[in-house]
Amino acid sequence: MASPDNKILLAFLVALTDLEDPLSDQERHTLNNLAGQLYHDRQNWERYEPNLLKLINSNKVLAQLYQVAKSHIDAVDWDTLRDLLPTPEELKQAIPTDKQSTRGNQPTRTDLDRSDEIANEVFIYVSEDENPPGAVKKLSFIQEIKQKIQRFLQNRNNNF
Image (cartoon, rainbow, N blue to C red; front, side, top):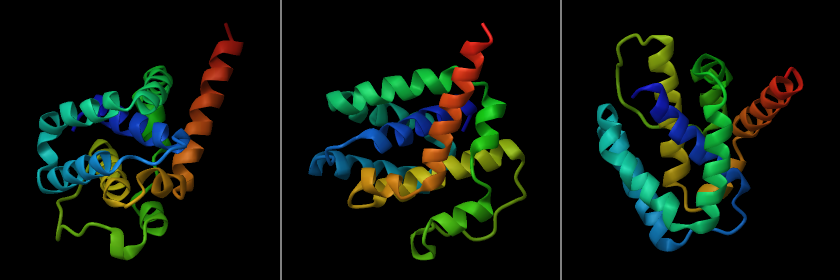
């Protein structure tokens, strides 16, 4: 998965942190299906991305939150964003062991691949939860990413 796809997942996760109303049963079902598809076919995210965007756009509030999050994330270069993602060890601490996907032995990954795997893992964990907005709010590193992006944008704007 290329970094633009990670930005989509990250923007979705950040938008969920601000979503006050729960997702509908149909939205949760769709998200759960997307998580299952991504879990089994991580190399073909482009197949599933339109379905996630369709889900986002079908929920007016979520779509607005997503657009704000995406515009903020797009304003930050990918290397900065990638550095904000938790390490695999931090992710293991944040996500309960019984909720982590297990895939057996994996080849050694580069930093870019690591960021792909982290974004995938968080998306799958949140999407499989009965209350995705509640699940993402429990992940303090998502809130930290959101705050760091906001500080980065404020600092950048103050320098102009």
